[in-house]
Image (cartoon, rainbow, N blue to C red; front, side, top):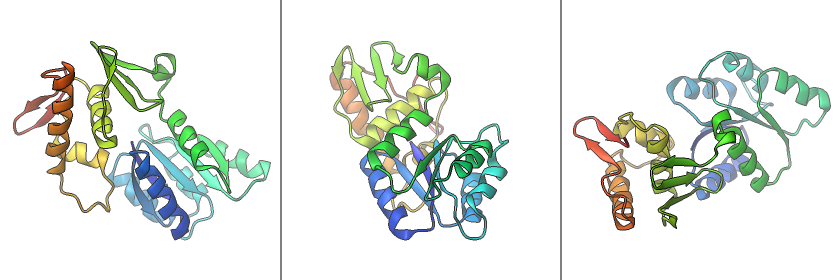
Length: 221
């Protein structure tokens, strides 16, 4: 999962990024509403964590700008404003959830996981592809009933490819999903993750699950 954290407190944004990284999520940081819109124009996100009290353009302004976009990521508002009218205004403006500061990081992660589930996933949360089963709720994958021991990046790559099965994803597309804009890594790291993931899949009996389209990228059919 790739997140956009829109928060002008360096301390809080750093804490959130570290906690998201521990959970296997890549995060970009925007310190104000205008930077948030710039990130949203350039990258695709699975969810947005949005403070309301921001410089240049506040959270309500950001919500207004992205509310009608058909591809808009779900938005979780984090705010110290705990009045009912503030929550109502934010939800009416397009926010999908609202969490009052201070908050539990575990609750924040649970709410994010709930937000990114599509309607079809709520009915059938486990992604299945033959003997392969992926449960996004607990970020676990099984093949023939045996759990695969995957790193967070390996799991994120496998879930991405299965969700997009039949579609060839380039190395750059995969990198953007797995890493934030501040990462010092090169997109060549995708080849390493694919290699180690393939090794674990092959050991479990899932040979040739991930196919390479030379010059184009990777695909699960």
